[in-house]
Image 1 (cartoon, protein in one colour):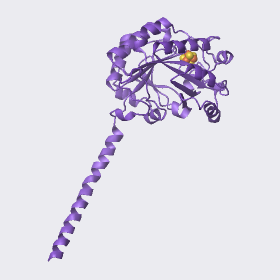
Image 2 (cartoon, helix red, strand yellow):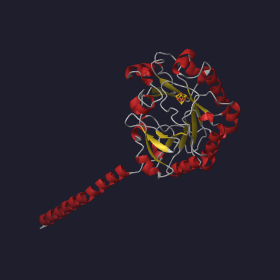
Image 3 (tube, protein in one colour):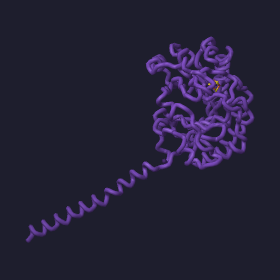
Image 4 (spheres, protein in one colour):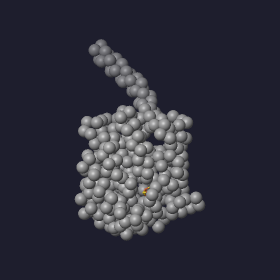
Amino acid sequence: MEVLYILIFLFIYYVIRILLNIYKQPKCINLNYKFEKKKKIPISVNFHFTRKCNYECGFCFHTAKSSDIPTIENSKRALRKLSESGMKKINFAGGEPFLYPKYLAELMDFCKNELKLESVSIISNGSKIKRTWLQKNRDNLDILAISCDSFDEETNIKIGRGSGQHVKNLYEIAEWCHQLGIKFKLNTVVNAFNWEENMNEHIEILAPFRWKCFQVLILENENGGFDGTLRDARRFKISTEQFEAFVERHKTQKSIVKEPNNIMKNSYLILDEYLRFLNCTNDEKVPSDSLLDVDVDTALQQAGWDESAFFQRQGIYNWSKLPNNGCTGVNDSKKFDW
Ligand code: SF4
């Protein structure tokens, strides 16, 4: 009799286990489905509000196809929408953003003090920056990034970066940033004219907190040299091996962040002068609908943004100059609820 009870008990036990497993299975599938469908968050956006520039870099991939800039009201409207959708960092880019210093200052003030963004940054060629402007607006600026591709002015002139004052300007601005408590960053486009250069000495003196090294990128309808493009960057092109040789030569620089073409192309959210995301997935820039006309989710779906490449290139880093300002720190995406 006791044996019978044990057998009945075991039978019931296994039936319950089988039923529980069957019950668990669809739940698991359902969770995966939810994960796949989860919304993208425009955590970090590059706002190219102007295409106009006073330089003529031969490889420029955001050329002056229009001289339009959005009205300040439209820019604020789009920025507010992005902030409500989870944007934490804005980078003002161009063209050359310092061609419009008042406009830039007003948007920075809006982003920092009204939208309370964690980080406001600018990428500039450095030729139009005044110390007085930096001093006045420093509280609203976390990072100032300057482009420099060579410390030899002859190479800069060949590239189209200015007429011989670029390195002098760069040193001056780096000094101002260190004096005014603005994080100083450096961007370098590695190309056929500079890939053999040794920049170590200068990088050590300038001490950028982050040094981005991009492999020169060709986008058909911007710098591909075809009909309607304003640049032909094909003569600047380098191989992956040449790019890696440049990175290897500078590997002792702690600030270096390398971006080969495959990581760079789709990992940036680029917002243009008509408040549209630009989709670079097919080696060209295809605009989304404008944020003035559609919601952020709809525009994001058309943006071709590769979130995983964004993380792979360390898109989240220590981007706020104030401590304890909600800044995430390098690769610490766990604090975000996505
Ligand atoms: S400074 Fe920048 S925006 Fe101006 S031409 Fe050069 S790459 Fe283009």
